[in-house]
Every structure is written in structure tokens, then in C-alpha cells.
Image 1 (cartoon, rainbow, N blue to C red):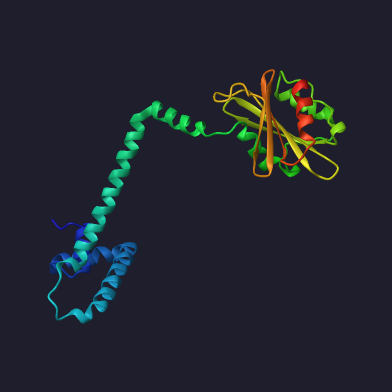
Image 2: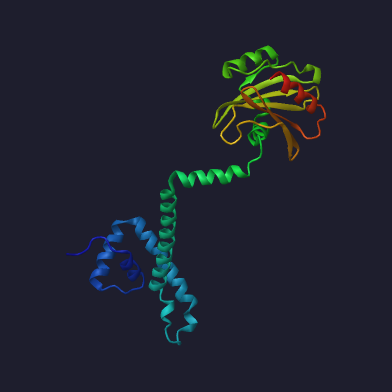
Length: 250
């Protein structure tokens, strides 16, 4: 019985004019009925013609078996198959590692994580007014919004004495639950943000400290049920006394 669908090796043999006449006719009939495959084989034939033209000057030399197209293509296929097999083995190994492997990965990731890195990232992304969930210039309105999402947060202090007015807030989340970014602005348009979240698995209680990341500074602490970070320009001298005031009130 004639095979209707040619194998990949038969297609390569067809391109190299190595098929028996009867089988070649069957392949040609199949290609006529499959235009996409015919286009692919035509591209192979064009490659073969270009290669033969490039090697035309070597016609008098004995044929090098290593230059035969079909074996070359076969070796390329085998190389791709070995790479796919290696990838499959790696995927299986990861799968068999299960939860232990995933926990080791997480431990590696968090080993280099800086305190309140999410606060700095949130400030970079959301501190502009267009990215906030609520626009609020009234501290009381901001306090009411905060109370709807965080049951045990303290009273938000009035920051006008430090030159800052509230702009708005953005509700976020992390592995421990909801988080919030509160944004304030001074008369020159400089912004700071107050980030709060529940203690997480990797930073349960935040020791009081600070660090600089690029042009931003993060001052962080824990108070009550939450971890806090005050993010500002690194050279803003007003922020440290502001952090102390927030650390007492929140």
C-alpha cells in the first residue's frame, strides 16, 4: 500500500533527487495537495541550488560525503532532539524536586532581598497622581480610606508641619495580604510616600533602619501590627524627623 504522507527523510531524499520514480511521483502529488508543505520544500530546494552553485568550482574533486545535504540536515535534527531531551530532563528534575526545590529557590531569592524593597519599587511605579486609586487632599478622607482596608492602623498624623500635603493612595498587595502606598507632596512638587503592609514570612518585624537605593532613600520600622517605610529623595533632610514622628503615631 502506498504511503500517502511522506516521512521527513523521504522529503529530504526528494530534495536531493534520491527517491525512486514511483515514490517521487507520490510525494509530488502530496505536495500539490499541501501548499504550505510545498513552499517549505521549495525553500529547501532553493538552498540546495545555492549550495550547489557555491560548490560548482569543486566539481572535479572527489565527492566529500560530509557535504551531502541529507546527512547534514539529519545531524542538525539529531542535535535539536538532544537539546530538547536535555531540556525535558531538566524540567523533570525540577518537577521531582517538588516543594523542596521551590522553597530552596525562594530562600535563594530572599537571601539577597533588601528590607522593604517593595516599598521603593511601589514609590517608583505609583507615586505619580495618575497611578493612584484615590485622589485625596483631605487627611480625614485619606484616614477613612485607610481604615476601610486596615483594621488596626493608627491615626494618620497631619504632615503640614513638615511641609507636606496628602495627594492620594494606592492599594497594593504582597504575600502577607494588603499593602498601601500613601503619597504626600510639598509646595515645590516633591513627593514622599508612606508604605505599610503586614509582616511577611521573610520580614516578620522590621528593625528600625534606613538604606539608599539610587536617588531614593527608604527609612523603615515596625509599629503595632504593621511594617512601614517612608520613601523620599535621598537628599531630603526633612524626612528623618518626619519618620520619627510617624514611628510614634502609627
